[in-house]
Length: 139
Image (cartoon, rainbow, N blue to C red; front, top):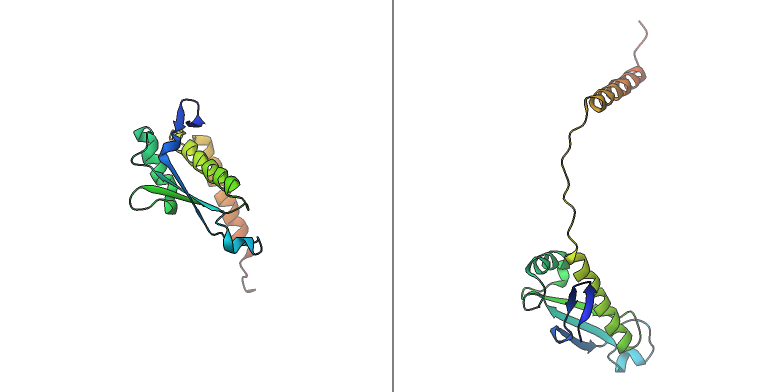
C-alpha cells in the first residue's frame, strides 16, 4: 500500500526497510532487553520518485544520506516499536514533501532612485552624529 506524500506523489511501502535496535534513554530495565528504536532505510536512487525530487532529496538529506544513496532515519522518541516506526515514516514523508516543493525563483530588482537617495542621506546623517562625538581638545 503506497504512503501518500503529496497529491500525486507517494512512496511504495516495499521501498522502505525498517529494522529495530536497542534504544537509549528512559524505559527502565525494558530498554536493555527490547529493541524499540526504529531504523528506517530508504534507497533514494532506486526509488520510484521523479528525478528532480530525487536530486533535491539527496541535497536536503544531509548527514542522513549514506555514500550509497540510502537515507537512514532513526526514531527512538517513543517506547513502542510501532510508534517509533510511524515516527520514522512521518519524518521521511516530511523530507520527501519538502524535496517535492519547487522553491520560488527570486526575481532580481534594483533599488529606486529615491531609495538610493534616502540611504545616502541616512549615511551622511549618521556620519555627522559620529563626527560630533569625537573629543576635540580646547584651543
